[in-house]
Length: 189
Image (cartoon, rainbow, N blue to C red; front, side, top):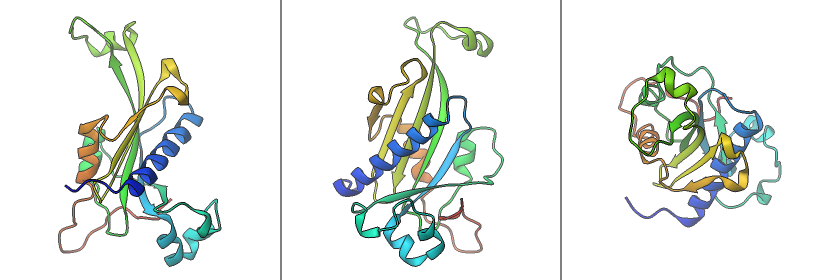
């Protein structure tokens, strides 16, 4: 895969930071959220309804490669995030995909495995919010925030901080096979 374009990578990082901050503003214990990432200017030029919903109506004021996250509603039923992402496919109009998920991790040095009920009350329990996104160009960005240190300045960020999730998101961008499809919508809100 070619090296990501720095302008696109910056736009993706800004979008994922914004998605994570929006989730943070709503508080902890939120649902899994999935987003189509669309290139703002071309999408607004092609879709007046989309353009009317933008917070910045002056398209020339937006930075190059600006992305708008469009939260998806009515997602298919799934028991896990992995199962949900395996069921998603995006049309070519979608530049990328992102998600926000909260996870419980155990900060244990001894490698011991706890039963799920014990993990919930363990003093080593850490609640973590992960926002991750990928672009068709290959760029990826992840933002992690601990509940115990709920400060935007303390977020861990990087291109492949959660490589398994990055790969699962990338798989949703695979070309659609020929035939009738019902992919997620680039502008569904």
